Image (cartoon, rainbow, N blue to C red):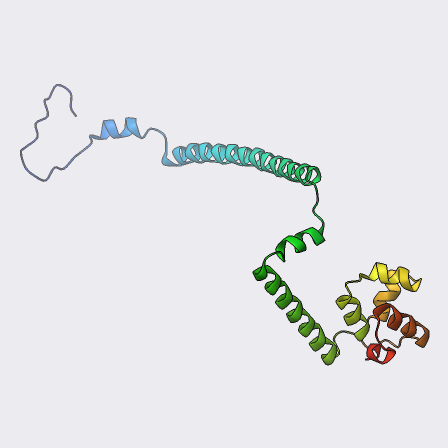
Length: 180
């Protein structure tokens, strides 16, 4: 009991603090369990608030991503497209560029020839590629559809002789060159 007494502390290094029982009962009047429930409810509310804020931020991020895509598309549409021929012409205007271009095509031709040798690419597709013709254009020249060209180009497909003659004429090769 501390009423009317002055508390004096000795000048020693080790202090032992004692709380009188009456003060202890006042400070911890609520059971420890109730204090934990209060802390948990505060924590739960903060978590819910953070989740709500996170949801708002995610929506904002999605909106901003959509806006960025829209701006990219608008920019792309407003830019004038350069024809590939112009890009190639500019690239090959220097001796280094021309050498690099020729080497790249040489390497590509070798790769395609190897695929034909391995049976992974048909000779018809090889000749179409080296002539720079796409399937749609070749289909028009043969008076057929693009899916038919895709079928004809499959390795091992038996191409009719009539079609082989037309293809040989288009590619400027012998019919034998188109037979795998």
